[in-house]
Length: 146
Image (tube, rainbow, N blue to C red):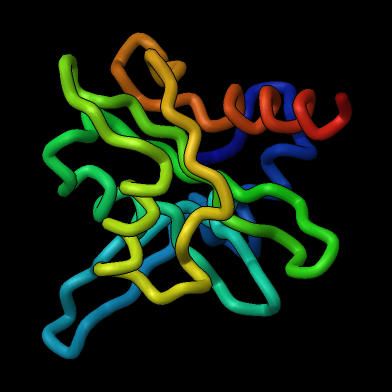
């Protein structure tokens, strides 16, 4: 990639010293395999600890009552940020916020448990079906201000 057309600022933020910075976070294992664990812009930092939303989302998606999930960070005065989950429930399934948190406690450390779990009819998605986390962050920001 040579850069963004007519967007020199975006190009200088993305291409640094000849390297394309995609914003993906990952690691290489001892066999040389590369694993992508999340996106830098999605990373939640709570009390100085990195929380990867994708990890929480994957556990949520393993619950048979949950159809889709998204986890975002919410600003918090004490912690910096805390995880917040939005979930779509399978049709005819019955599960509460407390039951979801109890399920997560069986699989995650306490600091990774979302502060709130919002059960929604449908998560905002783009044309390819990817959840639009920026829309969830905008909604959460509006709710914080009201």
